[in-house]
Length: 465
Image (cartoon, rainbow, N blue to C red):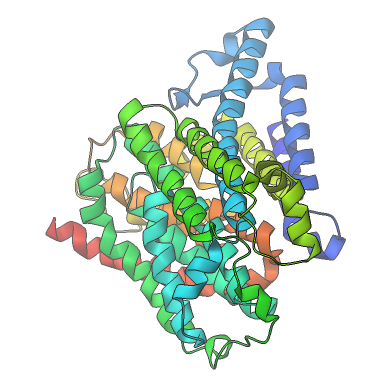
């Protein structure tokens, strides 16, 4: 039965990668393989000899000897656990996307656009690179990607050029998220699991993460896609904000998102609660400004009329990229099925057992660097969240051991090597309809070079600290 479930996952994953060839949206195979995987688990529950308890990051003792009812209970509890964890991410994402759409409703991104005076493609590349790197550390790599691609859509009108910028933003956002405890879901897991502290994470990973971003951007700056100047030929009215509250809503929206980590630190509640509070506050001001008869400038077009007669919150919710949300639900719950059967846990354990001598061993753990690097590659192919969850159960090194920091780096930045290897990549794929194989041919090798360069720098920094 485990073999069948693995085959279902591989076939579903293959259908996702060739969505443009088979003309089926990627969310469909993601949802189908999720549903089939859990259906097969339910039907064959008595044939499984082991079960992975995600709450304690370890295998359930004596699972094979349990009765049918007890096994079904474990399955239902595990399914509910994974749905809860996935829902946390999805609700957080919904909140962030809605705030971004509210900012866009008031044309707030024209404010940032007005700050970027240059038309040089190379300079814009570096501006967005550093924005992604530092913004992702503050508001997480997923939200940073949503914000920056939204700005990019207002600045770069040629989609063929824009997807190049989007691809590089994914690399920078994932690199920036790796050195902050709130920058990526995996570093947050390690932080909450008391494996790393904020100070040590910054000291160990800031330089490797920066190199991971700088190297691909340096190479890309010499590529033909970033030579010359942007074509700015467009309607002059597009540069004029449609609302006098544009800059106010931009600062309010971004401020709301930035306040989420502070809310989490003070209340110890999950980030999505803070995001809902931020959305509520932003929505209040959006409704007040929208109802003001002076909110819209005298631009007599269909879009302005639509804005004048609809709630900005309802309008923003209708603009959300729901297919990306459903795709995320399907892929995370499908991976959760593999995790629950102990397949990922066993895979990580096999790596540790079969390749202990193929890399420089970490100082205290005796774990091969190659295993951790392969964890990074695996996070691009599957998903970094369950792989980090498995590593939490596998390794018993103390807090702030260099192993945990290397895992944070590898899992955080390794996902850039495939567009569906990270949350930032998935949302960029949805927003810009980027083809899987286009990214594989054009961007993946840049991400790999940056990943390896950063890993080498980490090996030097850990010897110093």
